[in-house]
Length: 117
Image (cartoon, rainbow, N blue to C red):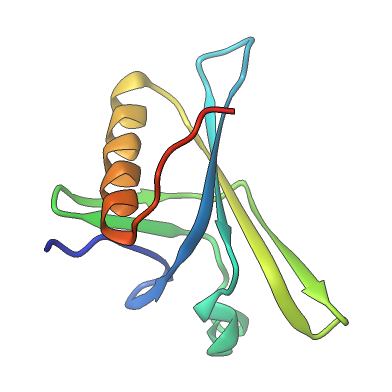
C-alpha cells in the first residue's frame, strides 16, 4: 500500500483525527481544517526549534506543501494536549482537486469515511 502521510516537520508523521472543509460563499477560496488528537512535533519537543510554518501532504502523486493559516492547540490542565487544529486555504479548482485526492487516499489508508454536514 502506498505511503500517505502528513508532516509538520519533515520526516515526522502526524495522524489526522478529523477533517473539515469550508467554502467562502463570497469567493472561490476553500479552507481545509485538519484535526489531531496529538502532535508528534510537540511531543518530540521539536516544535520549539522548528516553527510550524509548513505542512507536507505526501502520497503516490507526490508532495503538496501548504502554509497553515494557523495551528490551534487545546490543552487540558495546562499540560496535556487534548486536540490541535491546523487550517489552510486552497484557491483554484485544480489545487483543491489535488488536495481532495490526497484526503481520499488518507481516508482509505486510515479507515476514515466522509460525511456531509
